[in-house]
Image (tube, rainbow, N blue to C red):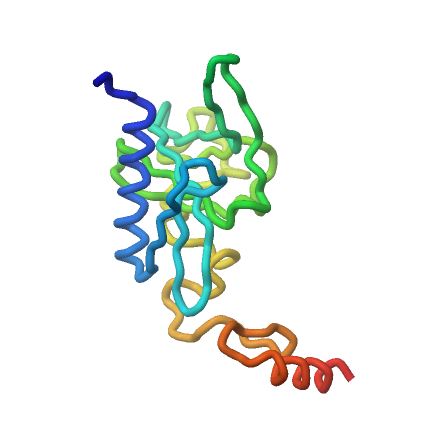
Length: 177
């Protein structure tokens, strides 16, 4: 059987992401299908996140990846932008550093992300996203800083999964007025 090179790289990226997320204390769920917008789901403290994993090598001191997906079939090569509402977190595995980097897709300006491993040759200092700053899940996605011991912010209007509906409705009405 012929090896599918891009599929092998994608599988390696997913396995590395799973190992890194498990080491960070997240539980793992793997979808049965390959046709969803996400590659895996992680959970912790009743919080579920859909994770899209990308495998990208470093080129010229940076890891660059477009927020799009590509595939080929008998009708040719197809490209489509990632639906940012269907993914909560993007994990980029770089084989050159053997590390995973995490980006919140909602906070990305434009359609391409560039994580710098080395300073740029043009001495640019503004608007640089350093890879070393992306080794933990973003607070905007995870809900708590990685060093925090507290849980997610509690709200009386948000229904938590283990609360009965009647309790939630009463507390929501009393907090609204």
